[in-house]
Length: 142
Image (cartoon, rainbow, N blue to C red; front, side):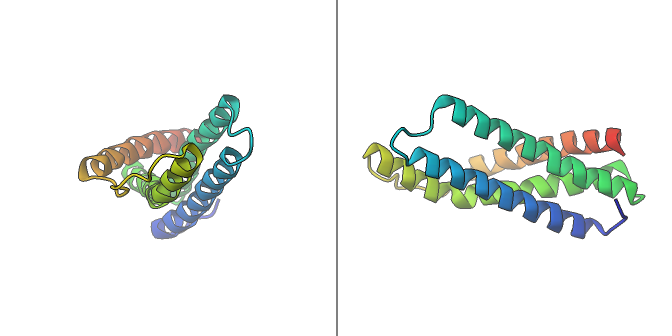
């Protein structure tokens, strides 16, 4: 991998992760809208793919940052930002998923589809934890 700016790493890996996560969510929504619905093995497979995505892309971004001559904490910051971009896509797609779920079950659409501040704060902690994992894996790889 070539040495590039940290912001470029965040943009490239974050956008790729966001697109891949949106594609996974879209496929899961299509499968859940089918006649049979999403079976438990399909949901487990999508969950496993999401976890792999949330670990692999930040790790690659961190490894690219470390190869570029930056330190561990710079790699941690890049990996955390990549996870934060993917998390933002999940938060943005939350209303779509809730509406689709409500339509499939025949229940009413929940009134408050925007996440609360504690949920967003927990998401930030989640981003930092996955950023630390990504930086650690990136340090092992680089």
